[in-house]
Length: 115
Length: 113
Image (cartoon, rainbow over all chains, first blue to last red; front, side, top):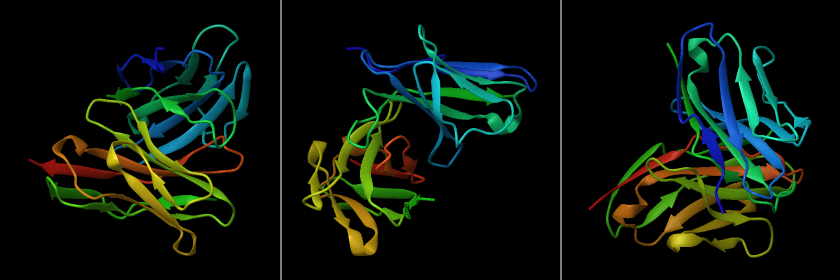
């Protein structure tokens, strides 16, 4: 079974451009989570999605950030008009079901650098 | 809101030394506790988890952790580390809603051969 896939692994954007990060969950998993890791910090929860629904976006910045998980295709984290402070590693995780006993499996991350 | 503290940011040990990494959390309700490891260039992997029952949890690769409710702690231990344990270790908690993990800042462990 392939694990959680994220692409690209590295992304460089100039200030003001858009960044699109993709996450394909493990086969059979319908729950996706996005986390951000700023330099020298731990991972911070951003958003939790099921197919076609945003369940919890309490960790998402109010502006410029959006996420979707369409019926077909990967989950997308979109950052509009990127700024230097958006430089971070963005990790996606997936689980089969919602619940504390359902392990979240993590992808390798996308390292975003804003120049 | 729940939070997790890992007080050791960098730890350097020689092979065969014993390891203990501290993790403290703040949350008034029932929590589930996890330790994840990230080896260089790899993704996060689950080492062990605690939901209920025996507070001493055994994980993969000889790791164990003890949940001490009165101290709000979930420290990770290994009696004898190996060079291959060089990695970054993250403690995390979630509540019974289960949908988000709160992570500590991580501890970078370097094991010298």
